[in-house]
Amino acid sequence: MMEKKITLSDVEKVARLARLGISPKDKENFERQLNNILLYMEKLDELDTGDCEPLAHVLPLKNVLREDRVREGLGQDEALKNAPEKKDGFFIVPPVIK
Image (cartoon, rainbow, N blue to C red; front, top):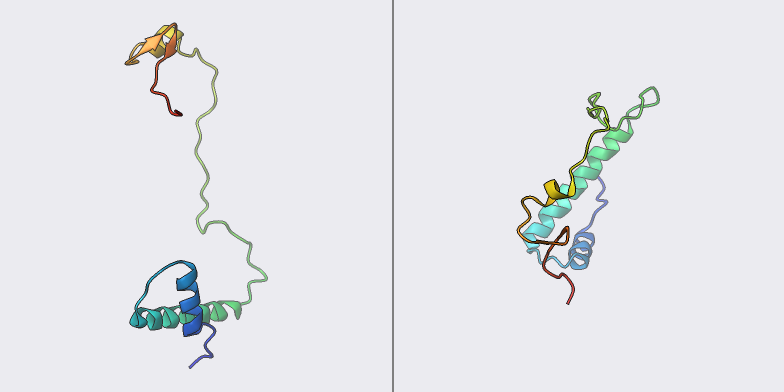
C-alpha cells in the first residue's frame, strides 16, 4: 500500500472550510479516493514527457468563425417594432434600482 498523502484530518479540514457536512463513512471514502488520485498522478510523473508537445486539447480543434462583413444595421423603427413599450425612440423597461 502506498504512503497516505491525504489523511482523515485533511478531509475533515477541507469539509469544514467548504462548510460541508459529511458522514464518517464518506470521509473515509474521500480519503481513499483522493489518495488514489494522488497515486495515479505519481505514476504519471514517472513518464518521460520530454519529447511531447504541450497541448490544450488532445484533438486538433479550432473555432470556426464566419468572416466579418459590414452590412446595414437595424434602423430605430425596425429595432423598436416589437417592443412592448417605447417612448421617444427608446425602449421603456422597468426600473432596476429603487
